[in-house]
Image (cartoon, rainbow, N blue to C red; front, side, top):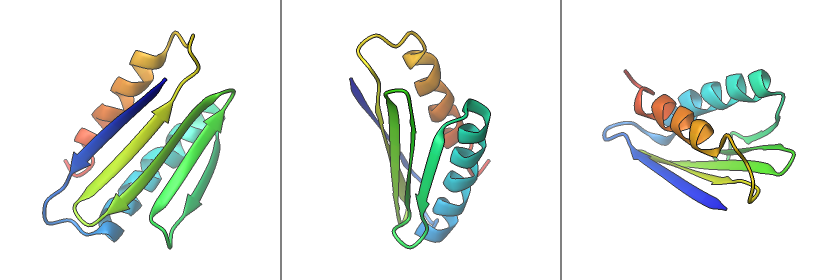
Amino acid sequence: MAHEIKRSYPGKNADEIYEKVHQVMNRMADKLAMKYQTDPAGKSGSVDKMGVKGAYTVKDGEVTVKLDFPMIFPMKKQVTQNIEEKLDGLFA
């Protein structure tokens, strides 16, 4: 089941946003023992573990995160809320 999260950061360029999102995703991947791949040139990255997949792309002023969970995944809401909170506080 796919879910998309989009956040805007007016006045921030892609490099600034990518650096912050990369830090968040790197910490999350370490904490949850997920495989993390990043593409600094493409301002994107992805995580993967046991059927849970996430990918992000950054453009000037915004980030889009796409999450894909297995049909039965009890922590879907918790994971989604955690990511939304991190993105909401990205430049706080």
